[in-house]
Length: 98
Image (cartoon, rainbow, N blue to C red; front, side, top):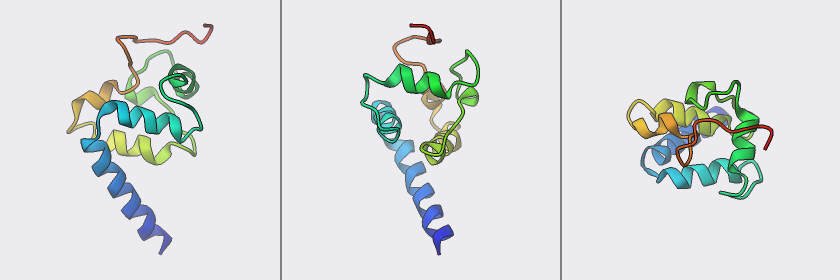
């Protein structure tokens, strides 16, 4: 029963990620972590970086965003702009010392 609910949720999330504006997906990413978008964007993204690159493949998920990142990674083949989801305003890297 719970597996079916989670499967349905993941499918709905993937459908939403496929069509939602990028800014709405970014807002959801910050909101599920308890932050406020866009104020907390750089802070929460830097917490999920596994290295200095912001490529989608180098972002680590946590319990809060695991389903969302899975949905983004699943749909990024069809929606190319998701590959640069974590690169905002032309910035390729965030300084962890700012």
